[in-house]
Amino acid sequence: MYKDIATPVRTKEILNQYGFAFKKSLGQNFIIDPNILRNIVSYANLSEESGAIEIGPGIGALTEHLARNCKKVVAFEIDGRLLPVLEDTLSPYSNVKVIHSDILKADVAKVIEEEMQGIKDIMVVANLPYYVTTPILMKLLHDRLPIRGLVVMMQKEVADRITAKPGTKNYGSLSIAVQYYATAEVVMTVPKTVFMPQPNVDSAVIRLTMRNMPPIQVIDEDFLFIVARASFAQRRKTILNNLQSGLPSGKEKKQQIVDALNQCGIEPTRRGETLTIEEFGKLSDALLPHFR
Ligand code: SAM
Image 1 (cartoon, rainbow, N blue to C red):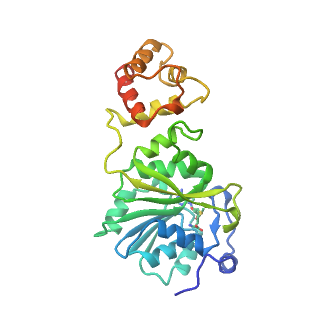
Image 2: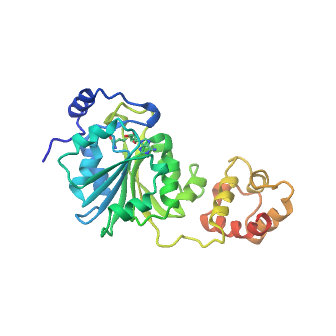
Image 3: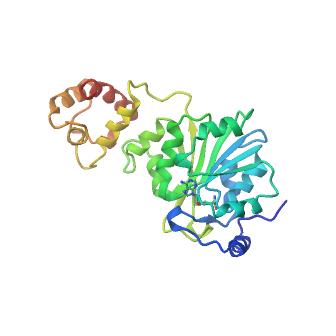
């Protein structure tokens, strides 16, 4: 077994050797505690037959733990300065492929097809760059990749919003957008002290398990998310007011919105945060004919 990358001493050694300076703009906060990495990997339940997709390998701290625990790792890294570092730090592992790409621009489905042939169990495992957590998650979920799920670290505040249940203060359009595709749970909270440099925010790891079927059937998925976003635009406002201001020409269509709410048995004075995903599904279908 090789010495872990994720110790403060080895991380500093690597950074000094390559004269690497962190770029805050790329969300570069590297993990310097191997125990945290072992826990993250264990939540992914990988086997020797599994594949792992990582976003942002950094200097390879999490990557090597994945490489030791599954058949193949494909890691997307945006920062070209890290490529020679990774080539060096990951040289003991023949089952890692690093791709120099912005994950938001990558054709991940195609990469899986090419790089994970014959692998049936695939997990996304990552310590995400916090400045793009939500776009990355939404892209991966929306792309309907052949994955079992995701185990990802992010700022705790976003983790709480993603996993929130109706009626709670964190529940919002992000909870609905993610929980439509996957079941979501916070599996671990992580202190700032295990990062170099330390971030300003607390962190948490969430596990998303992809659903075989969405929890609700709607006519138009994109419209469901438009309705959900509009419903939470101003949390103090009623659902009727939010839909009027948030939907295209909503002001002129007040009566149609009231009718749709009544049709679904939803009081127009309720607030978005009290609606379940099933109610949003019904409402979206009832509103759709008026906004198509
Ligand atoms: N995995 C390493 C660790 O845990 O120590 C590094 C995690 S660090 C929080 C985020 C990493 O994502 C950095 O290496 C950064 O360069 C990379 N990154 C930032 N934006 C990215 C993007 N759009 N696509 C791919 N990688 C990105």
